[in-house]
Length: 353
Ligand code: NAD
Ligand code: LMR
Image (tube, rainbow, N blue to C red; front, side, top):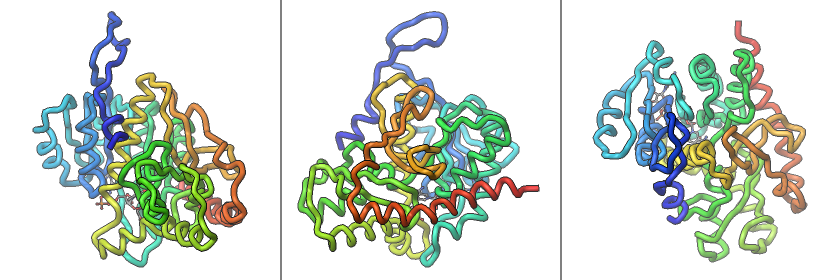
């Protein structure tokens, strides 16, 4: 796809490292993946290994990561791949990382909600983010572990308690971010559904999504679909529900073997590449993400964001203006659930002994 070619294209950049200044082709960023041996972690590591902007790729897991790193290290791309196993090696994995991606944790099985994963995954995220705070507090942190509506606030609270919280550098990254991101992608869930329904060329379709990442907190703004297209009330209802349940569709199809891994790895790799381009000074980087936000009365909210060297440079409020009546209602309806998930994530850290 154009988007994939664009985001992974070899880019010339101005290097300000060392004593000289020059235009070079440089791979100079360190990316750490925590949970790298998992269903998301492995394809994500492969995609990041393809990036010309990465010089060091550190893979951490509690088991099985040695083989993944040995395997990947044979690919003739610039980054050096190192493996780190278990808590005693976590600090070394994180030292000087520019971007830390966290897909560590358990996935859903059929019949479970994302919230059913909370206790185990919040614990994992808390421990890992404590180590991030101690070893690379300035890194961009990308949280994938579910339930994102709670684990991002959990991570924020850990960083606050450690005195290093920078809301501009903490992101919830979801499959849906890339699906509904500002760039057009050829293989995406909702764009696919809308394109199928309306017989549109997939590459042209772009549907923003706001809110959170679970059930009704996922709010696709079909009225803002680009190119402009009209839906019947029945179509809006049908598409909204299908988009909200897209993750569950995959969970059921995998029938006990986990949830989305490949599309998530693709989404996460794109988010990493966008973050690195932003760190590298590209002034035109937009993504969708679940971040600390003042766009609504909720402390965290997913919307389009502009990324810069220092993380979130701006939240893009325009999607929230001029919602349809259906979207207005859905927006009001999602607030209590999202609020409760956020509070649950924060309280989890606050009630630790
Ligand atoms: P998986 O079970 O295949 O992989 C998880 C990996 O995490 C395993 O390798 C495991 O060893 C590792 N792990 C467990 N505890 C750890 C710890 N304390 N430290 C480091 N690593 C640890 O699962 P998966 O399919 O890769 O999914 C991972 C998580 O991502 C799940 O919580 C899932 O719900 C979530 N997910 C989120 C989205 C999203 O849109 N945000 C999409 C898909 C999956
Ligand atoms: C998804 O949307 O695919 C993920 O959040 C995984 C899940 O549990 O559905």
